[in-house]
Length: 222
Ligand code: SF4
Image (cartoon, rainbow, N blue to C red; front, side):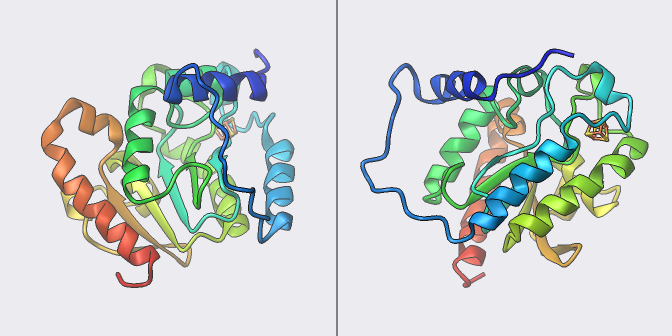
């Protein structure tokens, strides 16, 4: 297994998203409201990042825990890391990740600002196949613990596979959209995966409708 370097990976990621300029906010850093949750999330990551509970632990390059604000009100969940995520150690990188960043900017959020992003599985399935039920059964407890620590107001499952995996429903995405589901006591909605928008631009308008709704829910008006 190749150990990942989090600082180098992060710099590679920001270069990919923002180019060669390293941006630093002019705004003074606001103190975190709950540093305990930051610490707990980091402690939890270090407890589990050598997990070998299923076979994916043997084939991964990186353990992809998640990224973002540890006190986020919005938690975005994908199904599992892809090839680039496995390489870099961060979720939603590459073209789909850049598009997700643009969608978040349109609702005045970012990975660092009130959003946390992770996957159901923390290790990449070979050839990007769907997670197996046995893998989900072993790994989902980690996601549930992340949710307990982050305490989001809303979870958004990105894509049909993430939605059906979390909701244990074998439904098309359209049937899961526009409904507030419940995931272990936290409201959950399902929308398109950004990679699907890259493949088919007709998914962009409904996705934008979903994110306008997400913004309203987070503002307490949904
Ligand atoms: S996918 Fe989850 S359960 Fe399987 S090895 Fe990785 S962290 Fe452990």
